[in-house]
Length: 590
Image (cartoon, rainbow, N blue to C red):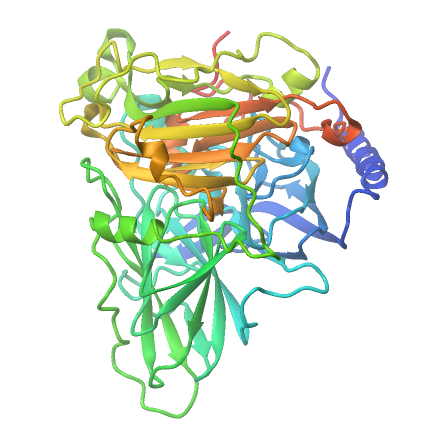
């Protein structure tokens, strides 16, 4: 029997009050309240108008600001056409997985016409993070920055900037994104590419009907600006540069790094960076560009460039055309991307120390692949009539009908299996140029998770593969944790020699790590956050194809190491996020 709308609201209010009371002693800082209204809004870009889902009618959505250690409540009112969830990207949510947000992992979608209040616990995060929808591809238009300032009474570990500016990169599609996604998943073929990229909602000078609305950042000569950069692009890494201006990177994924002065950055979908830039050039107009980076062979990416204008205030004759960056790498510049990412190091100061796990208790070797799944009668639009799929250790993840957290917490069987493998089923030359999809590399669909004991020390080596000649960079994102990126390299990982190259002194701490094409990356973390936590590629098409899994971290032996109880109301698992009470293509079939 379905609970009535009024009863849902009553239960939610009761849960909100009980949770607020219960968590009062947990919150160390201030408490903030935000209202998010999900609704369709009209936007005109690239000479045409379309309706799309937004938060509070804005694109990108509203910024959340809080201090380290604060607690944030966000009431989400869904006035859209289908169910949606919201994820607080990079925020660990200690013991609080109920409000992490990924659909069918920690909750089911918020049905249209209902509300759900998220409770976001900030802990060690400091810097720029972000929030976004975590249902199908709705994050293309439902996203925004989450700025976490230093705790009250403390300051930045670098000279305080004069001003700061949020910069959000996004994808723009002329057509309805959810329709495009559904068509691609139904056919089993390639997904449609975006029509443009955008900076703070505007495509910029190099697109039709766009130069009148190009985003302009006004600056004063001599001032230093903190750019809080978010890459919410759907499926593409980006190079970023400002003409004639050096950039000093001071933060990555909500933690500080040793200041790194560069002429460009490379940022993957899901990543955030804090970057200082000083307006120290002759007053003029300078292009800020975000240009795609692609290291694969398929060559299926949006080859356009989005621009903003870094515009000096004052009395001068503006140029007819802004100054163009001469140093931004080309689309396929693998060396430039590798050079940048390998230079990042944790700050590792007394105020911001590192705690790299040294005694590993669980090691996992996970292959990251694009492949296929068989279709009856070769009826799909992928190669040889098969369905395009992606996988981790040859497992293509399938969403269950009941979210995994609910099933785990209430001991309901039949919705997931605890046999996600620690290594791939077959070992072969993962980076060979001659890998075709066959019985060794074809994906097996399932809802398989990895179970960890509380406080286990985990090392994961992600190995990129070149199955179907489809190897490319994969930004892997882990919910519920920040991990140390202790090593990365090109080629097949060698478990004898490559660990000697690990950085165990000042590795960068992150929540999203790029796995280079035909290469590997190793991360370490301590499983000290009980709950259910999603791990996936942050290219949304790869996630849709199955490049994801989840970790269940068991409770410890104390109250402080136990999952917090659920709120009185959680969205019911009765409707799919997109089309009502149907199973989506990648939901598990019972």
